[in-house]
Every structure is written in C-alpha cells, then in structure tokens.
Image 1 (cartoon, helix red, strand yellow):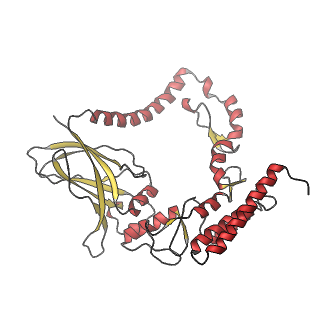
Image 2 (tube, one colour):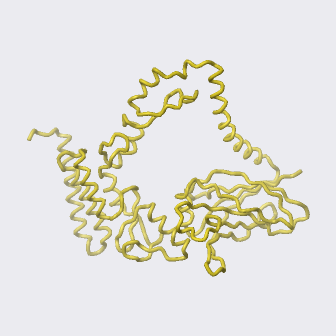
Image 3 (cartoon, helix red, strand yellow):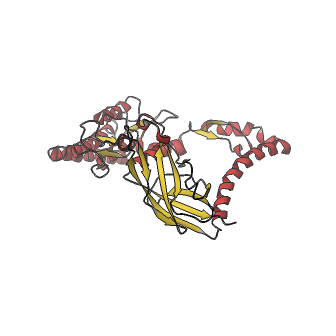
Length: 362
C-alpha cells in the first residue's frame, strides 16, 4: 500500500478516535439511556464509514443506507427528536404527529412504543444529528456522494450539473439547464439581439408582476400614515365544538384595540370533517367586534407572525365595515406559506400572532 500523505493520515486517525470514543460511550450509556446509546452508536458507525476504502463511490453509499435503517426513518432532515424510550423521529414527522393529535383530540404518541410525546417530553438528539450530517448522500443533479453537511453547498454553488438560468432572463430568456452548458447557451442566446420593441413587450409583462408586489407594500405604508392605528399580540387557544363529532377551532380572549373590544376566531381547513386525513392544511380566521358602535366602523386589518415565532406568513390586507348588525367578518385565509408551516402552528400549544388594525376615517 502506498504511503499516505500526512494530512490524510491525520484525517483517518481523527475518524478512528471518534469511532472508538463513540462506541465506548454507547456501551457505557446503554443501561441508563437507550436513546443516548443509539445516538453514540450512530456516531461510531458514521465515523467507521469514512474509513472504508472507496468512500464516495456508489457501493459506499450502502453504508449510509444501512445506518438509516437503524432508526427506521429516511434521513431527510438534520433535526431529530427522541421519545422517553429512545426512539427517534425526524423534525418533520415529529411536528406532523403533534399536529395530527391536536386535530383528533388525542395525546400524541411515539409511532414505535406508543409512549406520550410532546415538545416538553422530547428533546433533540445532537449525537444523532452529528452522525447523520457525516453520512454520504447523493446529489440530485450529478448523482455523486457527499457528506450531508456539505451537500447543500455543493448543490447550490459547486455542482456542474445544477440547474441554472441564463443571465439574460431579465429580458425574457426562459432557458433553464445544467451549469456546464450555461456558457455555450449565453454565447448563442438570441435575446441580446432582439429589437427594442420586442424587449418592451417582455419587460411590460415583468413589470406587471412587480407592480402587484409593490402595490401591497405601498398599501401598508399608506395605512401606516393613518391617524388611528392599533396593534396587539393575540393568542389563539384550541377549543372543541359541542357537536356529536367535535371539531377543532381556535379563539382568542377578548382584547382592546382602538378603544373597541374584539375577538379573533380561526378554523382548520374551513371546518372540514376529517382534516387529519388531508395532507393539505390551511387556517382561516375571522375578526369579531364585541363592542357596540354608534356609527359604522371602517377598518383594514392584517395578521403577522408573533415576535418569537418562526412561522412564515405573507402579509395580506383585509377590509371590512363593522356595524352593530354586521359585527363579524367572513372567514378569510391566514396567508401561511404551505402545509408544513400550518403544521407548526397546529403542533404548538397556542398560536401566537400579531394583529394590526387601521381605522379609516372619512
């Protein structure tokens, strides 16, 4: 065997030491915590895979696939939670289990041992996350193997087969293709030679899309110039209807904004009968005026995420004229990005958002 350079020997020794220490920790902790032992064992296995000859080849990816079977779940995310008995769940599945339990009015349980799980009972397993980050994973473009911790950077910046766009896309070029063909395409692209009239038609279409985005932000800035503006933090709490088949809904305690008393209500999938059977999940809400008014109260309002939440909500402005006879809005969509973000809200004990109210004066 040819002698290895010093740097390569150093890498081999570091992985060997990591594997030995992790294996010792797994054996030592198996009696006190099986979950911790499983994490240390995965760490040792991940270190061992780097010492196998031919790392990065197609055959070597079987090592990562074999380690994946240890926890019984595909390694799609770096965040892993474990139940009190040591069974592991990826972050996406963990949130989905909590959301499903909330919709069915049940206690969330581990899919393996059926013990109770919650955000307070389960915690992240950093040892497993570290081990998973070192496992080989296949690039979706070039099909080569890379450690998971490096895969995102490779796919975004380094892969020669990653999908990219022509630099003339701003003047209408629709080309999408592999990065290694970009130079050849741009040299032959016909868009730089188009006439001014042809380009103006393309730019007009792009301007229309841009105007819609600017219209929203201009509307918000216009509302901020109003004399009467109010905002408050609101907390949606889960409740159940009195029907034979109960349904989940949310409601806030009464709160005061603009010298009026209000309540917010929300519902899942527009009160669909079995929302837990649907993969697509949405939330809609309505604003109710609880005070009596002497004259019509015209308001614009919008909901945004709370100060400590990470859920992504797009700002949408709604408008309504409140009277004593018409004191509640229709249910309007809570503009959540996707079903994953909706599951985050459903999995939480309460939903914390921020409401802005703008009174329109004639």
